[in-house]
Length: 262
Image (tube, rainbow, N blue to C red):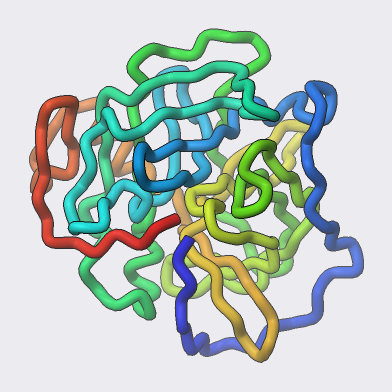
Protein backbone atom coordinates (compact mmCIF):
# COMPACT_ATOMS: atom_id res chain seq x y z
CA UNK A 1 0.00 0.00 0.00
CA UNK A 2 1.41 3.33 -1.06
CA UNK A 3 0.96 6.47 1.01
CA UNK A 4 0.48 9.41 -1.34
CA UNK A 5 1.40 12.94 -0.40
CA UNK A 6 -1.45 14.26 -2.52
CA UNK A 7 -2.67 17.83 -2.60
CA UNK A 8 -6.24 17.17 -3.59
CA UNK A 9 -8.36 19.96 -5.00
CA UNK A 10 -11.34 19.08 -2.87
CA UNK A 11 -13.06 19.71 0.41
CA UNK A 12 -13.89 16.54 2.28
CA UNK A 13 -17.50 16.35 3.29
CA UNK A 14 -18.73 14.89 6.57
CA UNK A 15 -18.57 11.15 7.14
CA UNK A 16 -21.89 9.42 6.63
CA UNK A 17 -23.79 8.69 9.79
CA UNK A 18 -24.20 5.17 8.43
CA UNK A 19 -20.48 4.54 7.93
CA UNK A 20 -19.34 1.32 9.59
CA UNK A 21 -16.04 0.12 11.02
CA UNK A 22 -13.94 -2.86 10.02
CA UNK A 23 -15.25 -6.28 11.03
CA UNK A 24 -13.03 -9.37 10.84
CA UNK A 25 -14.65 -12.25 8.97
CA UNK A 26 -13.68 -14.94 11.46
CA UNK A 27 -15.98 -17.82 10.57
CA UNK A 28 -17.22 -19.52 7.42
CA UNK A 29 -20.64 -18.03 8.07
CA UNK A 30 -19.16 -14.52 8.40
CA UNK A 31 -17.28 -15.00 5.13
CA UNK A 32 -20.15 -16.36 3.10
CA UNK A 33 -20.33 -14.52 -0.21
CA UNK A 34 -16.84 -13.01 0.16
CA UNK A 35 -14.79 -16.15 -0.58
CA UNK A 36 -13.76 -14.71 -3.97
CA UNK A 37 -11.62 -12.13 -2.19
CA UNK A 38 -8.20 -13.49 -1.29
CA UNK A 39 -4.73 -12.67 -0.14
CA UNK A 40 -2.25 -12.36 -2.99
CA UNK A 41 1.01 -13.62 -1.51
CA UNK A 42 4.24 -12.38 -3.09
CA UNK A 43 7.14 -14.71 -2.38
CA UNK A 44 9.91 -12.92 -0.45
CA UNK A 45 7.99 -9.66 -0.65
CA UNK A 46 4.72 -9.44 1.27
CA UNK A 47 1.12 -9.49 0.08
CA UNK A 48 -1.67 -7.55 -1.54
CA UNK A 49 -5.41 -8.24 -1.80
CA UNK A 50 -7.11 -9.51 -4.97
CA UNK A 51 -10.54 -10.61 -6.13
CA UNK A 52 -11.83 -13.26 -8.50
CA UNK A 53 -13.65 -11.79 -11.53
CA UNK A 54 -13.62 -14.90 -13.74
CA UNK A 55 -12.95 -18.48 -12.77
CA UNK A 56 -9.35 -18.03 -13.91
CA UNK A 57 -8.76 -14.27 -13.54
CA UNK A 58 -8.13 -12.12 -10.48
CA UNK A 59 -8.01 -8.34 -10.22
CA UNK A 60 -5.54 -6.34 -8.12
CA UNK A 61 -3.41 -3.16 -8.19
CA UNK A 62 -0.65 -2.90 -10.80
CA UNK A 63 1.97 -1.67 -8.34
CA UNK A 64 1.75 -5.02 -6.53
CA UNK A 65 3.47 -6.66 -9.49
CA UNK A 66 6.79 -4.80 -9.31
CA UNK A 67 9.87 -5.88 -7.40
CA UNK A 68 12.24 -3.68 -5.39
CA UNK A 69 14.69 -3.55 -8.30
CA UNK A 70 12.00 -2.21 -10.63
CA UNK A 71 11.26 -5.37 -12.57
CA UNK A 72 7.85 -6.78 -13.30
CA UNK A 73 7.94 -9.98 -11.29
CA UNK A 74 7.58 -13.46 -12.72
CA UNK A 75 4.16 -15.07 -12.30
CA UNK A 76 5.68 -17.82 -10.15
CA UNK A 77 6.30 -15.24 -7.39
CA UNK A 78 2.55 -15.04 -6.70
CA UNK A 79 0.03 -17.29 -4.95
CA UNK A 80 -3.66 -16.45 -4.67
CA UNK A 81 -5.28 -17.69 -1.44
CA UNK A 82 -9.02 -17.33 -1.99
CA UNK A 83 -10.99 -16.78 1.22
CA UNK A 84 -7.89 -17.24 3.39
CA UNK A 85 -8.83 -17.42 7.06
CA UNK A 86 -6.67 -18.60 9.95
CA UNK A 87 -4.12 -20.30 7.72
CA UNK A 88 -6.62 -22.10 5.51
CA UNK A 89 -7.77 -20.99 2.07
CA UNK A 90 -10.96 -22.03 0.33
CA UNK A 91 -8.77 -22.46 -2.77
CA UNK A 92 -5.08 -21.86 -3.44
CA UNK A 93 -3.74 -21.20 -6.93
CA UNK A 94 -0.46 -20.29 -8.57
CA UNK A 95 -0.30 -17.68 -11.33
CA UNK A 96 0.44 -18.42 -14.98
CA UNK A 97 0.29 -14.91 -16.54
CA UNK A 98 0.20 -11.32 -15.31
CA UNK A 99 -0.82 -8.11 -17.04
CA UNK A 100 -0.37 -4.59 -15.69
CA UNK A 101 -2.18 -1.78 -17.50
CA UNK A 102 0.23 -0.26 -20.05
CA UNK A 103 -0.75 3.31 -19.09
CA UNK A 104 0.22 2.74 -15.46
CA UNK A 105 3.45 4.71 -14.96
CA UNK A 106 5.28 2.96 -12.15
CA UNK A 107 8.28 5.26 -12.67
CA UNK A 108 6.25 8.45 -12.30
CA UNK A 109 5.66 10.54 -9.19
CA UNK A 110 3.28 9.00 -6.68
CA UNK A 111 1.50 12.36 -6.42
CA UNK A 112 0.19 12.04 -9.97
CA UNK A 113 -3.46 11.02 -9.96
CA UNK A 114 -3.03 9.79 -13.55
CA UNK A 115 -0.84 7.03 -12.12
CA UNK A 116 -3.59 5.88 -9.77
CA UNK A 117 -6.18 5.93 -12.55
CA UNK A 118 -4.43 3.00 -14.27
CA UNK A 119 -3.13 1.17 -11.21
CA UNK A 120 -4.86 -2.11 -11.99
CA UNK A 121 -3.66 -5.52 -13.11
CA UNK A 122 -5.02 -8.93 -14.03
CA UNK A 123 -3.45 -12.24 -13.05
CA UNK A 124 -4.36 -15.54 -14.63
CA UNK A 125 -4.60 -18.50 -12.27
CA UNK A 126 -2.73 -21.67 -13.17
CA UNK A 127 -6.00 -23.57 -12.73
CA UNK A 128 -9.56 -22.25 -12.75
CA UNK A 129 -11.52 -22.08 -9.50
CA UNK A 130 -14.71 -24.04 -9.91
CA UNK A 131 -16.30 -24.09 -6.50
CA UNK A 132 -19.87 -23.14 -5.74
CA UNK A 133 -18.71 -21.28 -2.61
CA UNK A 134 -16.14 -19.18 -4.51
CA UNK A 135 -17.94 -17.19 -7.15
CA UNK A 136 -16.44 -14.48 -9.39
CA UNK A 137 -17.65 -10.95 -8.76
CA UNK A 138 -19.30 -8.96 -11.56
CA UNK A 139 -18.17 -5.44 -12.43
CA UNK A 140 -20.58 -2.53 -11.91
CA UNK A 141 -20.80 1.04 -13.18
CA UNK A 142 -18.45 3.54 -11.55
CA UNK A 143 -19.93 5.03 -8.37
CA UNK A 144 -20.93 8.66 -7.94
CA UNK A 145 -19.95 11.08 -5.19
CA UNK A 146 -22.13 10.39 -2.16
CA UNK A 147 -22.68 6.73 -2.99
CA UNK A 148 -22.18 4.15 -0.28
CA UNK A 149 -19.68 1.36 -0.99
CA UNK A 150 -17.99 -1.40 0.98
CA UNK A 151 -14.57 -3.01 0.97
CA UNK A 152 -13.08 -6.42 1.81
CA UNK A 153 -9.35 -6.41 2.47
CA UNK A 154 -6.36 -8.01 4.14
CA UNK A 155 -3.84 -5.74 5.82
CA UNK A 156 -1.07 -5.24 8.30
CA UNK A 157 -2.01 -6.71 11.69
CA UNK A 158 -4.97 -8.50 10.08
CA UNK A 159 -3.21 -10.61 7.47
CA UNK A 160 -4.76 -13.96 8.44
CA UNK A 161 -8.41 -13.15 7.84
CA UNK A 162 -10.30 -10.73 5.62
CA UNK A 163 -11.92 -7.65 7.09
CA UNK A 164 -15.17 -6.14 5.86
CA UNK A 165 -16.15 -2.50 6.04
CA UNK A 166 -19.74 -2.75 4.99
CA UNK A 167 -20.42 0.96 4.53
CA UNK A 168 -18.05 3.77 3.56
CA UNK A 169 -18.55 6.75 1.31
CA UNK A 170 -17.46 7.90 -2.13
CA UNK A 171 -16.20 11.40 -1.36
CA UNK A 172 -15.43 12.49 -4.90
CA UNK A 173 -14.48 11.31 -8.36
CA UNK A 174 -11.50 13.12 -9.80
CA UNK A 175 -9.43 12.61 -12.97
CA UNK A 176 -10.13 8.91 -13.28
CA UNK A 177 -9.78 8.14 -9.58
CA UNK A 178 -12.28 7.64 -6.79
CA UNK A 179 -11.74 9.15 -3.34
CA UNK A 180 -13.35 7.18 -0.52
CA UNK A 181 -13.59 7.12 3.26
CA UNK A 182 -12.90 3.37 3.41
CA UNK A 183 -10.42 2.21 6.07
CA UNK A 184 -7.28 0.65 4.58
CA UNK A 185 -3.67 -0.06 5.52
CA UNK A 186 -0.54 -1.76 4.19
CA UNK A 187 -1.52 -4.96 2.37
CA UNK A 188 -4.84 -3.50 1.26
CA UNK A 189 -3.51 -2.62 -2.21
CA UNK A 190 -5.72 -4.24 -4.82
CA UNK A 191 -8.68 -4.63 -2.47
CA UNK A 192 -12.02 -4.70 -4.27
CA UNK A 193 -14.49 -1.92 -3.55
CA UNK A 194 -18.08 -3.09 -3.77
CA UNK A 195 -21.55 -1.83 -4.27
CA UNK A 196 -24.58 -4.00 -3.52
CA UNK A 197 -27.14 -4.15 -6.30
CA UNK A 198 -30.20 -6.37 -6.05
CA UNK A 199 -28.54 -8.21 -3.19
CA UNK A 200 -25.37 -8.95 -5.17
CA UNK A 201 -21.89 -7.58 -4.46
CA UNK A 202 -20.35 -5.98 -7.56
CA UNK A 203 -16.87 -4.46 -7.89
CA UNK A 204 -16.73 -0.73 -8.68
CA UNK A 205 -13.09 0.09 -7.89
CA UNK A 206 -9.72 -1.30 -6.80
CA UNK A 207 -7.74 0.30 -3.97
CA UNK A 208 -4.48 1.89 -5.06
CA UNK A 209 -3.34 4.14 -2.23
CA UNK A 210 -4.10 5.95 0.97
CA UNK A 211 -3.68 9.63 1.74
CA UNK A 212 -4.60 12.25 4.29
CA UNK A 213 -6.54 15.41 3.59
CA UNK A 214 -7.18 18.01 6.28
CA UNK A 215 -6.31 15.44 8.93
CA UNK A 216 -8.70 12.86 7.54
CA UNK A 217 -7.46 9.55 6.12
CA UNK A 218 -8.91 8.56 2.79
CA UNK A 219 -8.51 5.69 0.35
CA UNK A 220 -7.95 6.15 -3.36
CA UNK A 221 -9.02 3.77 -6.10
CA UNK A 222 -9.31 3.51 -9.86
CA UNK A 223 -12.44 4.33 -11.83
CA UNK A 224 -11.93 0.79 -13.15
CA UNK A 225 -14.30 0.26 -16.04
CA UNK A 226 -12.38 1.59 -19.06
CA UNK A 227 -8.93 0.39 -17.88
CA UNK A 228 -10.33 -3.02 -16.97
CA UNK A 229 -12.08 -3.36 -20.33
CA UNK A 230 -8.70 -2.86 -22.00
CA UNK A 231 -7.02 -5.52 -19.85
CA UNK A 232 -9.78 -8.04 -20.45
CA UNK A 233 -9.50 -7.44 -24.19
CA UNK A 234 -5.71 -7.91 -24.05
CA UNK A 235 -6.08 -11.20 -22.22
CA UNK A 236 -8.69 -12.37 -24.70
CA UNK A 237 -6.31 -11.58 -27.59
CA UNK A 238 -3.39 -13.22 -25.75
CA UNK A 239 -1.37 -10.26 -26.91
CA UNK A 240 1.97 -8.83 -25.79
CA UNK A 241 1.65 -5.77 -27.97
CA UNK A 242 2.09 -3.15 -25.27
CA UNK A 243 5.69 -3.39 -24.13
CA UNK A 244 6.20 -6.62 -22.20
CA UNK A 245 3.36 -6.00 -19.78
CA UNK A 246 1.81 -9.41 -20.41
CA UNK A 247 4.27 -12.07 -19.33
CA UNK A 248 4.07 -15.76 -18.67
CA UNK A 249 6.16 -18.15 -16.64
CA UNK A 250 9.85 -18.22 -17.50
CA UNK A 251 9.90 -14.69 -18.94
CA UNK A 252 11.52 -11.59 -17.50
CA UNK A 253 10.53 -7.96 -17.93
CA UNK A 254 13.17 -5.44 -16.84
CA UNK A 255 11.53 -2.03 -16.64
CA UNK A 256 13.53 0.16 -14.26
CA UNK A 257 10.37 0.78 -12.25
CA UNK A 258 10.17 1.42 -8.55
CA UNK A 259 8.18 -1.14 -6.58
CA UNK A 260 6.57 0.05 -3.39
CA UNK A 261 6.09 -2.73 -0.86
CA UNK A 262 2.42 -3.42 -0.18
